Amino acid sequence: MSPSSLSTAGVLLITVPGVAFGGVTLLKFLMRNVPGYLDNPVRRGLWRAGHAHAGVLVLFSLVAMLYVDLASLPEGVKALTRTLIVAAPILMPLGFFLSVVRPSDTKPSRLIWLTFAGGACLAAGTLTLGIGLLL
Image 1: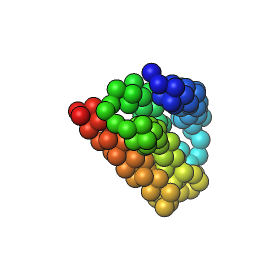
Image 2 (image 1 turned 120 degrees about the vertical axis):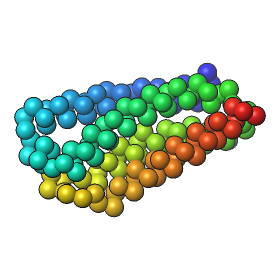
Image 3 (image 1 turned 180 degrees about the horizontal axis):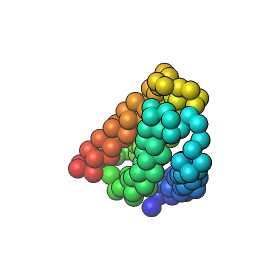
Image 4 (image 1 turned 30 degrees about the horizontal axis):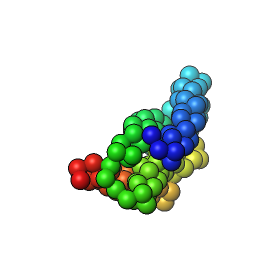
């Protein structure tokens, strides 16, 4: 594994306790019936989606780092691919969480666009990686 992929994987692994902390926080909200969570289906759904996407995308990104080094891509494109793939588990959950940060929010704010930006990064990064693996 290249030093760049190793350091990227290291950063991703450091985020795992944050994802776990988020899960514990959501569990506390459920157990303690925190106002603005159980009684707010939009906020509850978006926060649950944010937590799920964070966990799955961190794992996906870790696996993808193994393949980036094997792809037939120039080094600059490999670096861009790493960045795009790692941006997804950051941007998507941020969009879900920050778009309904106040307990009274009943519809997402414009920060939901971070989710779309993360999805675009994921699509571009995985498409580039896939093409690089097929070359």
